[in-house]
Image 1: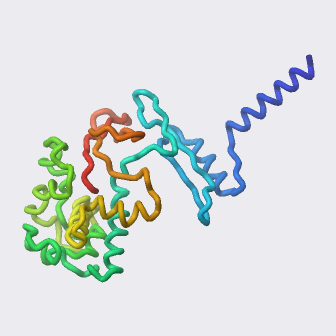
Image 2 (image 1 turned 120 degrees about the vertical axis):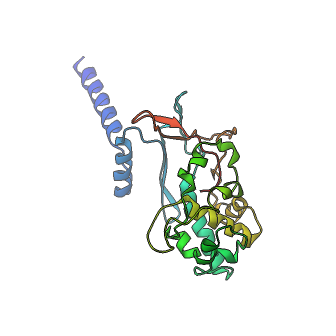
Image 3 (image 1 turned 60 degrees about the vertical axis):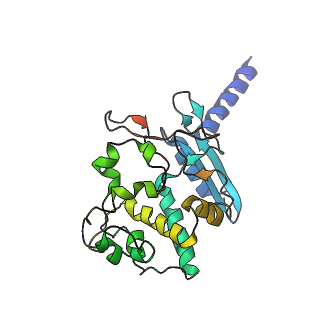
Length: 249
């Protein structure tokens, strides 16, 4: 009987220790894994790789909070503002090809841009650095008070900012604005004669085998896609389903 109790104690002790800490060959990976395990409410997937070898791959949280559907390592997430990184990569690819330079004004590629001051003074570099002075359509009354179903493409957002005055003179200060990268997306389309999403798919995602990455329309049924959540403006510390669509950011 004593041996049985001792054996059960060992099993319980080992199970508790295993739940508390995870160990990997790489010490840094172990530290990251244990840190992620300790987070309360973290939702997403994490992959750590070194020299083309995957050291860590794990999913956390829920793809659907209401039904408690857990994320898995193949879950699709809309990349939202991470898309700015892909846009910047695309711009520098075009710079390498000699099709654009950092000092080019947006008017070179968008000659019909409504605001002449912006057309002639805002450069590609200022757009990349969020120093253009372009208005923030994302928080405009017109954008906030209209159905987001109308904004599914880059072009559909044009009337929200093109005719608006600059917030400040170009390169005068930093102001993070989605508008900057929307215009970079338009520049990419003007140069390549391709839809933005298609260019990113062919020149970035397909090259690095990113098969489950995209910016999905949230009102469509996408296989194995997570719902999008954001913090509620009405209820403190509560999550709500995001109301935005799939236009490039």
